[in-house]
Amino acid sequence: MAETSVVTLSRHIVEEERRHPEATGAFSNILYDIALAAKIISREVNKAGLVDILGQAGSRNVHDEVVKKLDVFADEVICKAMDHTGDLCCMVSEEHPDIVAIPEKFPRGKYVLLYDPLDGSSNIDLNVSIGTIFSVHLKVTEGPDGRLEDCLQPGRRQLAAGYVVYGSSTMLVYTSGAGVHGFTLDPSIGEFLLSHPNIHIPESTSRTYSVNESYYDLWGPGQRQFVSELKRQEGLSARYIGSLVADFHRTLLSGGVFMYPADSRSPRGKLRLLYEAAPLAMICKEAGGGAIDGHGDILDQLPTELHQRTPLYIGSLDLVECARTLVSGDSER
Ligand code: AHG
Ligand code: MN
Ligand code: MN
Picture 1 (spheres, rainbow, N blue to C red):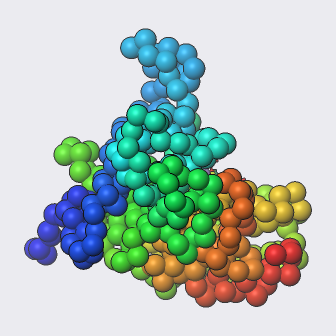
Picture 2 (picture 1 turned 90 degrees about the vertical axis):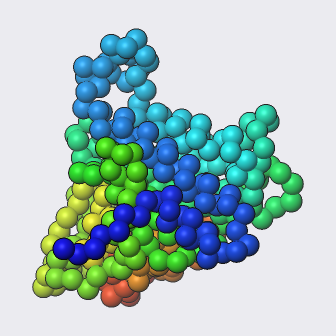
C-alpha cells in the first residue's frame, strides 16, 4: 500500500513560508483566507440546484433570507473574508467597476488581491462546473491605500495566482512561483488536502483543444487555419465547457490548448486580463506551458484599465507557439 501522507493546505503554506525566512506571514494569511472563502462558496454552490426550493435570486427563501445571485454572493464572501485582515491595501473584483477600497476602520497591508469571484456564471443553473480565479500583487505606491497603479501591474510581477474549481470535487490550485500545487476539499473535515503536488502540463495523448466554434464566421484567416490544423492532429479531441476555470483545469491536467480569440465583433476577445488571463498564465507557465494574446506573452501585457479584455491562447507550449505563428497576422497588437 503506497504511503499517503495527508498534507493540508495550511501545512503546505507553513512549509512554503519556511522557505522564505524574510516572510512576514501576511502572504500566507491571504492564501489561507482565500481557502476559507472558497469553502463557504463551495457550500453554497453545492446547493445551488436547491435555489428553486429555497427561492430564486432576489426573492426570500424558506429561511426568509434574501437569495442572492451566486456571483454577488461569492463576491461578498471574498470581500468579507479579506477586507479586515490588514494584509491588503485594496482589491479588484469583476463585480465592482472601481477599486474596492479597504474600509477606513480596518488596517491596510502591502498586497493587492484581484479576483473573479464566480467564473462561468452562465453555467450555474445547468449544474456545470464553475470557479473562482485570484491574483496577488505587491503594492508599489507610497502610502497605505491601494491605488490604480498598484492594480495595473503586468502579470509577470504577480506574487501568486490560483483558482478554485467547483466541480465533481472542489479543488484549489495555486502557485507562488515554486511549482503548481492542487488541493482537494474534503468536506467531511472541511480541509483542502494536497492531492496534486507539482502539477506539470503533460505531453499526453488525451490532449484537447478548446474553443467556442460557433464564432467561426467572425474569426480571422489565421485563427481558422489554426483550428483546422488542430482538427488534423492525432490524439487531440475537442472539448468546450464554457467555464474558463473548468476548461483551463482540464487543459492543465491533460494537456492541449484553450483559446478565446479576438474576432470581428470583439477585437479584444471576451476574457479579462487582470483576474482571468494573467493569473492562469502564471499558473500555466509555472507548470511548463505558455499563454499568449495572439502576439506576445500574456504576462508581458501592460494593463491600462481594470477590466480590460484580452484574447487568450493558453496550454501546452507546442500548441501555443503554433497559434502564435498562425494568428499573429489576424489583428493589430
Ligand atoms: P464570467 O462568468 O466570469 O463572466 O466568465 C465567463 C467566461 C468564461 O468563464 C468562459 O470561458 C467564457 O465566458 C465563455 O464565453 P462564451 O459563452 O462566449 O463561449
Ligand atoms: Mn470569468
Ligand atoms: Mn465572473
